[in-house]
Length: 237
Ligand code: SF4
Image (cartoon, rainbow, N blue to C red):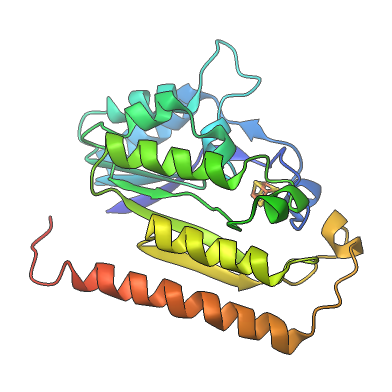
């Protein structure tokens, strides 16, 4: 049995396209003891795997006393006898610490990481208020791969953000090629009323957004299909 467990609510990040901080409010982490207690009781009822959920799980712990961070929580969850596997999502690249990367080596933590990049262009990342650059993102991917060889990497990608140029799209495509994701959630940008990005002039024709999206998808799909095909004939637990 696999079960989802909420560890926090809300978000403090204010990515310019996203409505979550306005609708769900600021980040609020649950007490670690409550989370551990809930998982212990789930394990007693047969749960073998948990997925820890939050808008930004890897900034877990802000404001809690005594001080605790997400890797500490993972360790507490991993110590639960009878629990076999731990997954979590979603992580923000800016909050992916060396400590969390080190923690990924734990045998109970599945070698899989969802790390939403949104764009491979530093200019677009700035416009989206993502608080990392293309280079910083790629450095963290490299560190994850060094810590956990063979780790599966997945992501989220937005095409057609206001002001996007063809060069920005090419940056995203080249980043996809460099990272070689195992899967991705892909979106054509659409404005959310009440967000800062909705106020930016967006005069790119919808046909052009679709053309850019398809160009990105062609590259992504080729990689995803190849990586899945590489596993044909292998046996996994
Ligand atoms: Fe927060 Fe994620 Fe929305 Fe950014 S995209 S504001 S990190 S919920």
